[in-house]
Image (cartoon, rainbow, N blue to C red; front, side, top):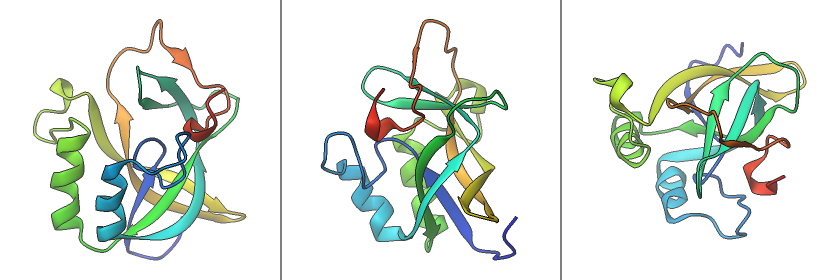
Length: 140
């Protein structure tokens, strides 16, 4: 893992600046105003279509990695409550939330892995369409 002690955020869906719609979601402005773009990244997991937005489930199974963007968080005390509300994530009651915020390893380039916060889907994925490319901006 990278020895930088900053806080990082890994986004893979509507919070990305690079989206399938071509235009960033309005919530991306919140990310951009509290973070600095580091670059693209990937993590091990599976991405599912949840009806207009994706859900990431960690997995060690072989397949395409989940692709997204990495941001360095400048104002975590301000940013987390806003994103937690948007993602239906209540850190005090994680089992009742649609997502939970966790720190996971994210590959930021050859030989560079960061510990980054991301939102993991907290519900069942049976019957949900898996996004085989691992890239929500390139739905396939």
